[in-house]
Amino acid sequence: ASPQFRDATVGVVQALKSAARPNEAILGPAELIFGLGYDYRLRDDGDAGAFRRVDPAFVVYREADTPTTADVIEENCGVQGLSCRFALSYRDSAYRLYKRVR
Image (cartoon, rainbow, N blue to C red):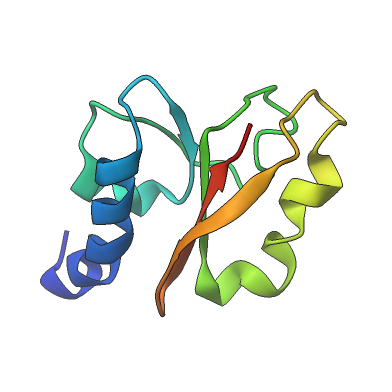
């Protein structure tokens, strides 16, 4: 990945590495794999798992996509058995990270 691209993901990748266990599902943009590596269960899914029946522990959205995507969790929770309780865990100028709260 280019340095500029990698630099944009550093903060959210660090937040995920400190909070997520490798066996927990993470839904987020594919570019995060460069920082996370393949030890984490990253799924690129803009529908927050609603159509794949994934119950993520973490959901990452790009800030550029966020006017509507932050609502995707609420729109899809319950429809396919998703956990509906997520809390904002990290935010920077490029990404928002939500963590499932049980």
